[in-house]
Image (tube, rainbow, N blue to C red):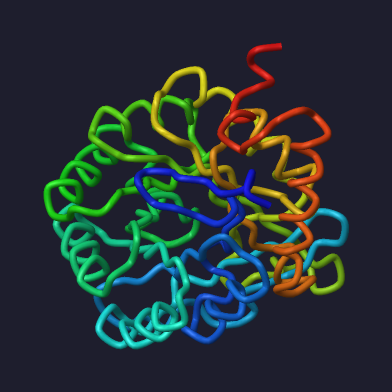
Length: 304
């Protein structure tokens, strides 16, 4: 499957299908399991400066036919403890992208520097979590503040910087432009959509945090639209995220303009071997449509 080999932001991937942040990222072993299952690379759990417990249960609710609703609250062991997990994954030959979150540009920069020292191939800035007060989309929905974070990280590290963007804003593609102008090497789009559900029996919200983020099949059209619009407005690579469970979904994101994709919710349901199934299916689709590489197909729908 040579046509699946992809080079993005000076990083080589054996295929363009990555494990998304927040799924199986708790341990180095789970990251390695995703890679052994066929992922082209993995994105770590979003890591902060200090340990964080997150929100009390219930934090996850499956919405039949729609996807997953979650409000975890960014639980993590902190960058010092998590370093052991990254080192384990790297020792198994895994291509790791380190995901970080912070409350200030300086905190993002310091965390990214720590990830670089661990040996990750790139860093993904979580500027888009929809339910953690003081973090995520509260920072990333402001183009000026987003740009300040990206610029601070770019000045602090030598590895590629990916900005993970929120759809929960009036002009999502404008955020992509702000990230590019500030020096981002790529954008990741999208994170979850702000959402909620109410139990009609208890007559209370199903999540302890009341609202959370929706992932899975329901958000695929929104993710595709974001990628499409961003591709027409920026010149850096795009990592497509949202509702991917079939090879056809991956192919759609590539045609819309994504050079890589990340898969999360579907992996939680179907396991690590989904990656190999997606890679095999994408390889078949590319060859059937006459493409000799992923890069050749990126954005092809814009040229029709």
